[in-house]
Length: 140
Image (tube, rainbow, N blue to C red; front, top):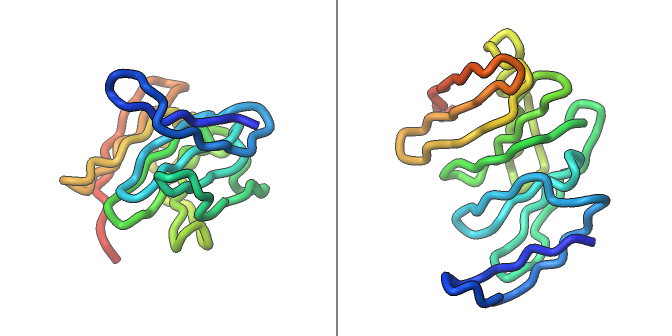
């Protein structure tokens, strides 16, 4: 079991959130009403800021190697998947997912990801060749 400690700016622990984890938390981001983390590359968890599990998106053959995670203004989760060179989007509170970007979009070992919530732009960094891409994310 891993833990996430929430601290104030002086370093005092405000609360501790236990996170079931095989090894460790691989990446974490704070969303508007919760925090989202990747557990040892295999699952994505969403917790409320007071530590209650909201949902868990479990690994399958399609999502086997999560590395980094970010969120948009609507609560969608974007995660890099290095083993199959994709960026996936997880939506509807972890109930659905789909490929957003693939190797044909230039994704090759995606390792870094950030969503600019003001401009609706997704930044993706490739680990394998060091290239960086900006993708304009449009609403459906």
